[in-house]
Image 1 (cartoon, each protein chain N blue to C red):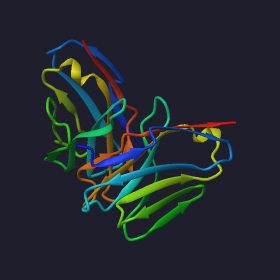
Image 2 (cartoon, rainbow over the protein chains, first blue to last red):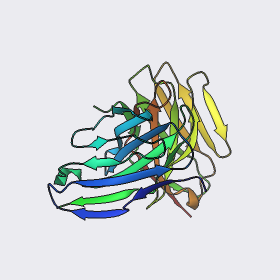
Image 3 (cartoon, chains in turn yellow, orange):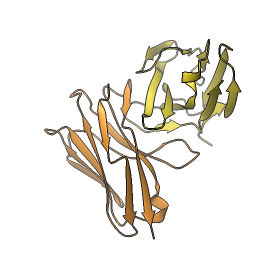
Image 4 (tube, rainbow over the protein chains, first blue to last red):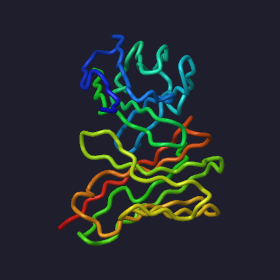
Length: 111
Length: 112
């Protein structure tokens, strides 16, 4: 089944404790991206990657890191999470000018 | 900086009616305009998309109208059904995906 998977789905952590949210796709897509969704703000792009070892900032990259060492994986790293990073996070993959497929989301609470 | 403005924030439509959601953009470099549908607890899913070389695209009950000179595009849902109740997002991007800007979303409720 073609899909984008994210882990964990739910995460509660404390300020400053490094965490990683994994994202994996099995559709051989070049493009992958991370978004955060907040009430009233819609989806905002954090980082995106056009291919392996090629990443670039979206609109809200502060406090986040990403890496793209393999085509299928695109982990999101929060080196020192803060409460304002409490949000619903989505990973997506696709091919240019075609459908983006979104993962099921990761709900993060930073205390 | 909100480059894609979406309205209304919420919408209640009777079953069988027409739902209309509007978006306006600023960046004339945008060349791909998708609409996504999101149900509670799920990720967004592509509903329909348009490129600026056409003024309208229809897929079943869903139609995108695009006005390049006004920098506006809208989603029309004909014969709205309770199963259409969801949050709808417009989006815009340029040069393939690269940076993608989403609207703030419209929560649609279709009542029987």
